Image (tube, rainbow, N blue to C red):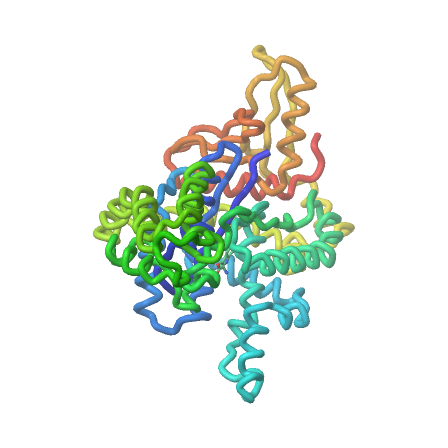
Length: 459
Ligand code: TRP
């Protein structure tokens, strides 16, 4: 089964080594697997919660997009976009806000920390806390649930937000799922996401040993400032005062943990032994610089080239937003209907709904000279997908059931500039017609996703 993986980066700063190790690198590696359909986005609405400097937001957006591209993200293969280019996200945020318990948000770590700080200072608990900070988890739930993401790669500090997204999605499914099914929906409106944490390296320590984070001012820059900035930061990693020759405890400084995030087990244990047998901290820092540079130097070169052409980055983001909206549009339609705002919310027993029932998408099986096939037809009888020929009716039936079971449209993929198709277990089982261009293809793909989501009975 294809897994949909989705993750966002808040555009309020410049990517640092912690972002690279904890989020960017594992997410890009995962995006290369055949069974994944990856979504990466710039969480610029989230950035507004933390930062009110427009120039910094704009610069950060560019730097982050360039970083992901430089690190090997292939925008043809994955969907890369900017949150603020997808109006369906704030729309869903409101719908979700209305099923989110206020008490749930009271427990969010970031909000609670802000309240605690105020209280500790003897201030009013809500001093300088915006409703944006309070609502942060709901916006994040919308990011994730809108696209029916299965896996969300995040740092450990974000796990609570994924749990909240599950809570909110579950609550929505509970409240509206029954009516949605009665109106013909085949699945719960939302897939419940799981966090994906790369166990060994998910939280990289910073210069002072605490989690590497902008808010602690203990970061090592990823690309900005070049190798010199990297070396200067590494020189500031806090170590104990043991002199060269004295055995060191590798686990008591960030240095070893950062090294390990870049080196394999064998290399790391050589490094560990060297520290334990007295390598000086200065030498250790030099070795760490070299190890990191070996991985990052070629990426930095690409990063610099990309930043020199911001127009190309914008183009890639706009193309990504178009792809994302082809999915988001039909999805928000489903949610609108589920809560009673959309046209299909007509009660099932009215004549009008009866007529509607005749006019819904369906799968039709047939046989021709090459074998057993099926078609997915849209509400007006138009052909959306034609399957390949199967040797026997059983395998054709299995394939069509796999299609109809996929209300989240996760197996609908773009095949080339003019066609999309339905893939299952690595095989393309059905294809669209050949369209004049990618825009026509995407429009039909969006239609097909809606059709699939509202599929009632196979016949
Ligand atoms: N809150 C995340 C962070 O600061 C960024 C983010 C926003 C995100 N929306 C998301 C991550 C959705 C994963 C999924 O790291």
